[in-house]
Each structure stands twice: as structure tokens, then as C-alpha cells.
Image 1 (cartoon, rainbow, N blue to C red):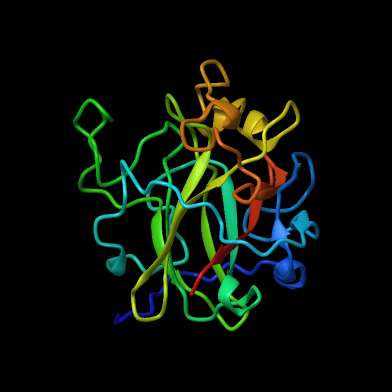
Image 2: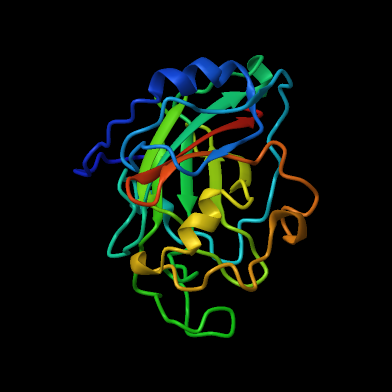
Length: 249
């Protein structure tokens, strides 16, 4: 797949060493809602770990998958959306190689905006607001020698029936699909999910009334043990998401 480099700013993340140190383990996730790390730089804490090396759960790509992801190779996927900064750091590992990090994996991500809307869709019963001509909060990156891809975005909002989440589709270097999965967010009274959804000044106006928690989510209801990210940071400084995804390459 021909992949052209973009002019997007590369956001430095100080957790590179930490997340790579934990790339020998499988993440189970934890949260810190009040640390001082910035959304464009990683925190010193990364992932909770397990010794198990298993393929991350496969999930649905729909109903709003990216139409032409090969056109969206970029680090900053924010577009014209506003919200609380979120730096996204993902490590891809190969189960067929004792969970060694996987270089040159093609990683697509996409998620909704603060109001729960997706770009490239809309004007229908699934999403009334029409964003068919927009491409915000979608992007592609190629994993480096440490298996890492990084994106700069905003903290996702939520919509009816789903908890806060990010979609991920991973391919090998030749474009063969390896895994479609989703990233879940830790929940709880002091979680980033709760703090962000109380931040109406940043455009998160729904609060938690009517929110669907992971346990009741129709995708995550069977468990999120290997899909749960680590979130660190704060509303004022932004958040950082660290996550490890295992594929069979």
C-alpha cells in the first residue's frame, strides 16, 4: 500500500520508554483522573499488565467505519473538532512471535466527537447530524520499529447504547487485515470518563445521565480485560491513552 507522509505535527510523548517497557506484557487498564500530564505528552505511568500473550478481542467495525482510510495517514486527527486533548499511544504486538512488537503494521483509528457524532456519516436515523463531507477524528499510522503508533485527538464523547470507545483496524504491511477491535475506557467515580463528561465548558454537555457503562455495552458486555486502556491526565492539561493490542501476524 502506497502511504504518503503528511505534514502533520508529530506530538512528542514522554511515555515512549514506559509503554515500550510494558510491551512485553498485556494491558488490563487503570485510570488516573487527576495527574498533571498533558494531552500532547504522555504520563510517567502506563499500563497495568498480565503475563498472558493472547490476541486482543475482535469487535465490529460498524456502523461508522472509515470509508477511505488510505487517504488519512496523519498524526493529528482532530480536524475542526473541539474538546479535551487526548494523546493516543498504541503498541502493536505479534502473538505468532511471542508477542514481540510488530513493525510496519498499518493502524487505522476512528471515534466520535464530544457530542457523539462521527464524520463521514449522518443525515439518517443512526445519526441525525450530517457530517458526510467531513473526515475528523479518523486517521492512519504505520507502526515504528518499537511497534508504536501515535495520534493526537480529543477525548471521545458518547452516544446511546455505547460506552466511551475508540475503533481500531490493524493490517500487516501488505494490507491484509489482521484485527478489528475497539478500545474501552476505565470507568468509576474518579475516572477520566466521568470528569470529561462533566466538563461542559469544553463541549461535553451530556453528563453521565443515560450513559451506557462497559458492563452493559452491547460490544463490551462480554468483558474488556484485554481492550481496556490506561488513561492519565486531567481536564485542564489533557489526557493520554496508552494501550497494547495483540494480533496474529
